[in-house]
Image 1 (cartoon, rainbow, N blue to C red):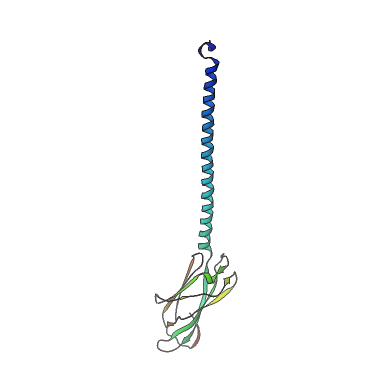
Image 2 (image 1 turned 45 degrees about the vertical axis):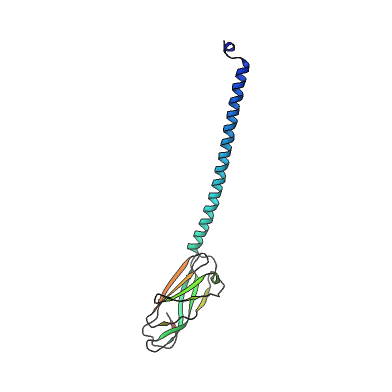
Length: 172
C-alpha cells in the first residue's frame, strides 16, 4: 500500500529538500549567534572602559590641607604670597599635579589660573603649591578649585581674617 502511493524516487527528493532547509536554518542561526557574541564583547569592553573612567573621576582626588600666606596690617590689611598644601584624598591613586588645572577666585571673581609644577603626588605626601599673584583683603573669601587630569574637582573656600592684626605668616 505504501509503495503504491509514493515511489522511492519522490521520497528521496523530499528528504534532500528538507535537509537543505535544515542546513540553511543552522547557518542563519550560527551567523546570528556570531553577531550576538561580537556585540556582547564590544558592549562589555565599552562598559569596562566607562567604569574605569568613572572610578577615576570619583576616586582620584586631592584635598587642600591648609592655605598659608603673609599678612600685612593696614586698612583693611591683606594677605599675599600664599601657598596651598595638597594631599591625596583617601583611596586615590597617585596624581600628576602638573597635568591638572588650578583656579583661584577671590570674592567670586577669577584671579588666576595657576600653573602647578609639583610633580606626582603619592599617598602619604603633602605638596605646597604657590598661589602666585593672589592677594586677599581682610574678610575676603578665596575659593581654590583644582581639577585632576581625570576631571575630578576639589573646591576649597577660605576666608581671610577680619581684621588682620598681625604682620607675618597667617593661616587662612
